[in-house]
Image (cartoon, rainbow over all chains, first blue to last red):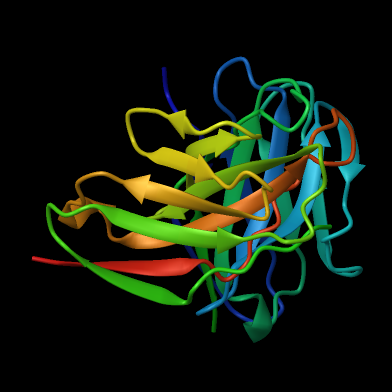
Length: 116
Length: 113
């Protein structure tokens, strides 16, 4: 059973370009979460999605960032017009149905975004 | 959200037990205590969780104080592969509104060969 997959593992963009990060959840998981880890900092929640729905986007920057989890295919985190401050590791996690605080989130290996 | 406090770093010798403490004095009665760890250059991974009773699994043990204001993650025999940042996280016991994990700064565990 494959784990959470993220691609690309490393992504280099110049300022002003767009970055697209993909996440395929574990088989049978319909809940996806995105977290960001800035250099030398802890992980910060960005967004929580179910199939075709954004449930909680309280951690998403108000501009340039968007996320989707379509009925078919991976979840996508999209960053438009990237700036140097977007350089970070972006982790995706997935889980099965919520289980009253006891469910486990399974993390992917991350995408390391570098903005030149 | 209830907060957790952990030491920034700890060291332990290889093949010895490690006790990683976590304080959560404002924990509510329905908060679960979760532990995750992040190995270098990897995504976090689940370690263990509990509510009131001590818990054991193949990776570690979780000892929860009787008043639940603190807990301790126990690695019974540390190996070099246990070198990681360990995060203690509280999760409200509800199916709604508690989905995201709130990571603190964690404890960076160094294993000395």
